[in-house]
Image 1 (cartoon, helix red, strand yellow):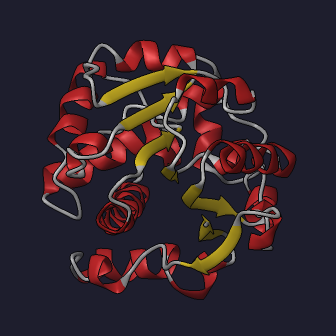
Image 2 (image 1 turned 30 degrees about the horizontal axis):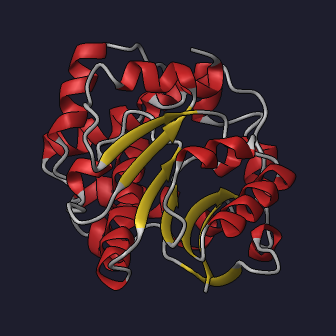
Length: 261
């Protein structure tokens, strides 16, 4: 795998770690894959606090997705940059067709642990190339989640992607987490993705940078809600709240929702 693809092991480890501790997520699949893969992480990538952050972030995405599935009965789900994530198992979407999307090398690895069905498909592609949407015949409503992906795409790449989604689907609901420009600058010095070889990331400060004539910014979501932080105890809770929540964290990481109707 190239360096960007290898970043999938950081959230995989985080979700396996918190699931094993009984925090935030019940994710036995991530535990299984992490145990089998045995990928070696080093430095900040293996921080328990980063693992807590990854677990909470995924729980927030799952919660939003469940809400949208209830609201949009005819929608399909597109998980862009799925990595080895088991969201298709964690979230009850039996009545919705689901597409997990990632690079060829990632999907090849993923197929060792996941099996396609009539309602669940894995697509091998680079989402910067619009042709991947030709593999999706449905064109009514799409719920799109992009967790830990936008920071590897330029603003122009993201604008191209949102334009393509809006051209293909009548309705789109999108949730995407982003680095700020400050986080992108700091990543050159202190960022866990450097531990797997990534040297270039992108950030935005204005959520409207990703919208277009059809796709509008709806609202910003809390990345680390208090109810999840409260699952931690003692010193761990205090340290996590200081490093990954509150005003300082918001200067680095943001979570934006968009919608086309």
